[in-house]
Image 1: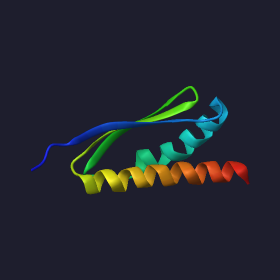
Image 2: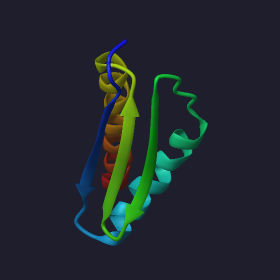
Image 3: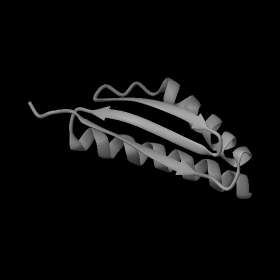
Length: 81
């Protein structure tokens, strides 16, 4: 078995309101999706969203990060409408 992968992603938004809207939209997904091979903390810090994670393998890491980035993009696209 390989070592877990640890890391974080931090995304800075134009302002705190946009960050809060994106965070609240994705937080619901974060709290309800039962990932088994990835654990993480999803936090809002001013105008930044931070996702700290531990994944069992590269596939779990890729799938989880793709999901979070897609959810954030959908939230930002909905703000523009």
